[in-house]
Length: 261
Ligand SMILES: [Zn+2]
Image 1: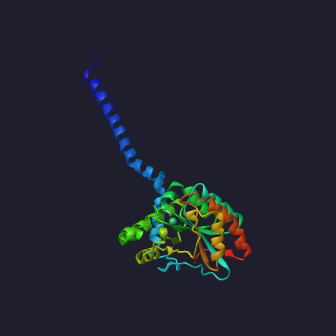
Image 2: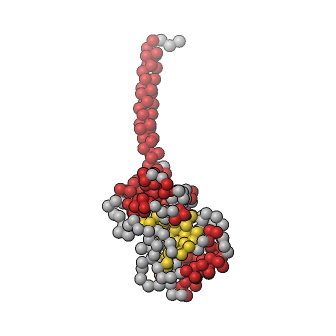
Image 3: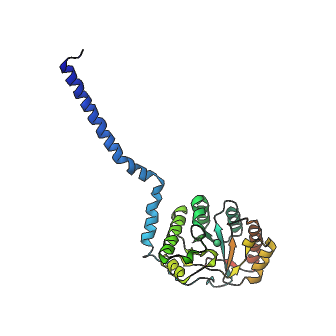
């Protein structure tokens, strides 16, 4: 049986232990969220915010509210554009063909797909190609929204691409379906993304056969042409086959490949 002095000693010891546990818990709780914030995926946010903050000051001169539908570089040049990716199956095939033919291209990517496959976005950028914002969900009715909603969608999809790409710039915006409105052109330029059109529509998405896609380009191409292909949004084996034939052909015709400016 414990006598009163022992009770007091145990009570004192328990109080000290309790105090120590309490202080430790408070310290851990204080540090917990900060540690999680620093180590978690949220770490990408500051770079996106930095891009946002810098954007109005560092607006590229080419971002004006006019639809760019001709590559203005001198000489016999064309700009290749690939829409609706990234696609795990076809984008790598297109990248391989571009590398084999020392060609550059612009990829108009959908934010939702970029978010799901960021490694593909980084591969596109690492290979020296450029990114174009093609909205988060390929919303062909984007122009029917209010300017505020439209602006928000442009920014969100741009930020998703920037984050997926590890901070690379997104130089262009292309309206899904080419459904432009004057407000969309203005907002695109305000957000430092040049509205990007095209002059040669291969209509490869209708799957007319690779021979028809090749013939379409051969018939329409001209110096300064911006050629529209698709590396995503459905089966694109015909596009891959056509591009494999067209890149050497364009080179043989004396064309070189430039980014739209
Ligand atoms: Zn599209």
